[in-house]
Length: 337
Image (cartoon, rainbow, N blue to C red; front, side, top):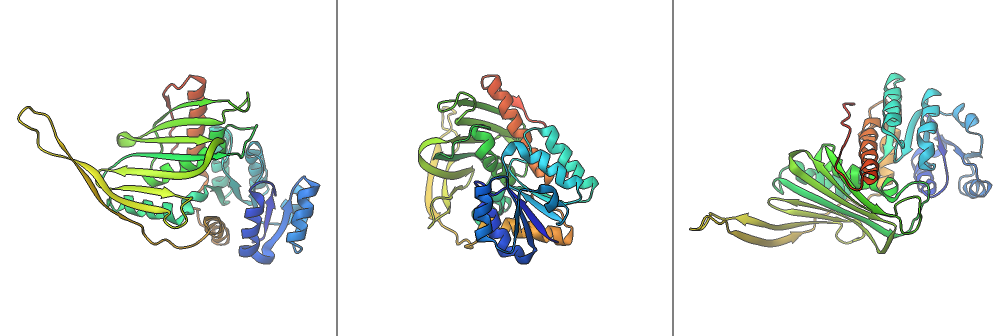
């Protein structure tokens, strides 16, 4: 199988670097409309045909990687699938649930691989959290909260939650093994009158589990953190802490028997903190290796089109909640594989 990458902008260079390392000479085309970006790509990948002709690339490869602005994801993915190509598309899969469902269904009809770039599902710390949760080591999951903050990268075509929120939605869905039933969102437009640059989203998952997500392009500190609070223990994944990306806290509040007046008392537990050893791998490399393996074998990706659909359904519900001033909005439940 041979590969073409479409887009060499913000995230494209990282994808191309990994694709070049993993696919080697099978990396045949890189398509971009900017002469400056094409010139830069040509200097880095002399064996790759650098062009602005998408049709020429599609005619000569079996698989494509899409790393273009969000509004182009669905049209380009549809064009590639209809041309008989396997597709990897960066998040979000589409800007509407209906478009995302169409792409996931089309990939199944045509028997082509469709994978979405939810990179954090390949992060060693996040995968370790999933193993801990599934083993029941922290007890019942009570709630999650995440922060994805920075000063930049500021966009004008989509709001902050469509831009960086998909990461936190996909992490929460992955850890809990479910989609939220409802969302409530508030945001503000401090930098651009067209899109929100700071947002606070609460999602309600089955079993009464809450996930609170704070995203912002306007914050003094770069923060990438997810906390999971369980009935027995608590987990903190901090992507900015190179020495201890995942911490396990033996902390909690244990309810004691009621006193003579019927009031319950609680004993706070503040035990040891453990930092598990994690493999030193680049999640993006693991992600693209998985895509290449699925293309070569015809297997379904662990982050397939329906995974992307479920994330887009949350994003669309968040937009509706924003329009309703923070009202609780049901999330469309998707039954795809």
